[in-house]
Image 1 (cartoon, rainbow, N blue to C red):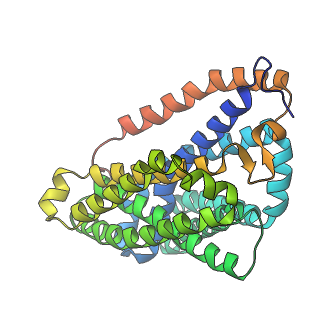
Image 2: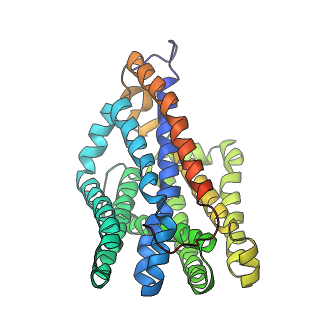
Image 3: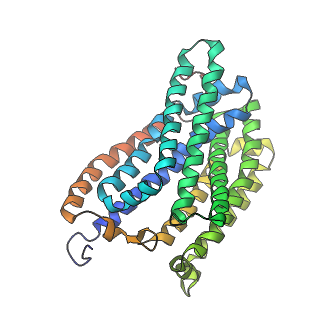
Length: 336
């Protein structure tokens, strides 16, 4: 175990924070284009070109955050990734198949004859759904400490459904910003339905996670922790109530504040992520392996630290630049 009194003891914490930040940004940024991929199944055929065009400049780069998060875990916490990947080998494989299927079908759909586009749209939808289901299973399995029983399977269903609803909510809110007329109206209906699923998933995780471990239960409900942490569930409830209120307002109100539903959803995801991170800290594998137990030597972490400090600003800059450049309503309905 790394001695926390030596120079650089904060490096494992820093690596865990970078890994968490990368995964949070992945969920938010790639979440909306995964959600759009799933929502395409419920859309009219004449809307699908426009839906794909809204994510064309972003979707591929969004996956960079997943690569960064997993990359940090692989190099900084080798003991942890051996355990995690050992338990999640099959869903990780399914996720990779889904991501590959999305990439291939997105490009092929743009190049094939019109009569074959529907086939590749179906593959894009399938890839988006497969990726989401695999990630939902991985999240629930990680929370449960990789111990799956009958109740654990039921919990997994709720978490997976909740993540799917989260992605479709992000996707629908993205479409509210980027589209207009009939498609925006459909996106508003999708957002309303997805918000219900998101609420059910959030409630399930909030109730079950403290019961998984005495450590988590004590961190949340011991006094005075419960008072300090109370703003997280309260702010989440306020955001959900405000989002519900906003989505049920008149269309002219939505048109004036098209950006607000996505901001509220992003805040909700951030609150959920921070609550989960607090529940697990300082463990990277619950009640089994702390960040210091799992990390490599401090000298190696220092090298990784310098690399992250050099690279991370460029990834942030590119993300901001892309979203600023392609801001506003979609005008050209083509992604090539």
